[in-house]
Length: 235
Image 1 (cartoon, rainbow, N blue to C red):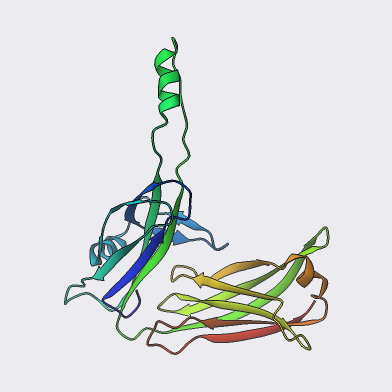
Image 2: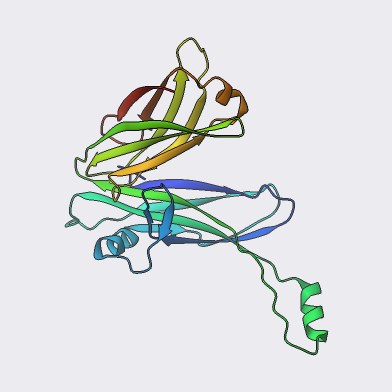
């Protein structure tokens, strides 16, 4: 929710049964490999980020094929310092109790334990105040091969006082279509450099040899100019 005071997220149930979801806000930090890790003890700034965002509803029950809009609002105090404030909105499925399992447990003479996996997905919610800038650079392009399949890796270096998120294109001269296009590649403010790994699949792996261009274009949604950077490597 960069540079806006409101946004919407649409939650869809694509399954064949009714589902219940709990919606919450959490703090996560990015690691150098691009993975996200929960923050157990948020800092004062992270607590401030949580207080900025309001949202509703906080619990959603959806029939198969049904959707629900979750509305978000940003309410920043007048004296809020310029900067970027990020939380993650977590959608977690709440499993239904299994009647058959309850009956089995009730009839058992000993102690029974049933483990039910709980699945969830999170998306970043970013609020920005003031004129913030970021720069990006692609470095150290390399390839790892395993049984004919190739994984393209590179370092995405970030500088400035805000996060970046965009689309990576892997292309080769003479080819009309890109070898790979990956959206939603981010480098959050807490990392100056992160590793990006792209599985190219069988077809792209076979075409990878030679001069390859890797480019990054930041997604729109910020008043700042898009970050555009590219690098070439002979593989």
